[in-house]
Length: 102
Image 1 (spheres, rainbow, N blue to C red):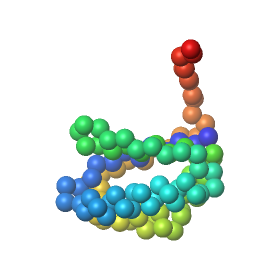
Image 2 (tube, rainbow, N blue to C red):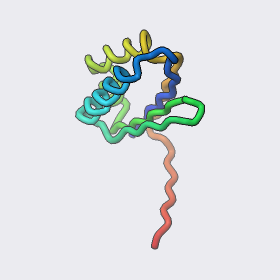
Image 3 (spheres, helix red, strand yellow):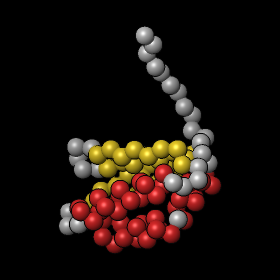
């Protein structure tokens, strides 16, 4: 398994409608990619957004990074949407689980 964590802060002057449309399209595109497992996005009270995506392998995650439409939206993000971001990448994470039974 491979995880990517994308932490970001949006620009105050960004086009929120365009961003939402791009984000929705990218989630749909990612879900159709080979090796995709899941994606979830969370927003903190301070405005930071975190997206966690799960992939079957590092190669699958890299394939997503190179997907043509995604590459265009990445560039748009740098130019128009994001004030800052950081991308974290982890292959074969240590996983501990708990589930209450009953």
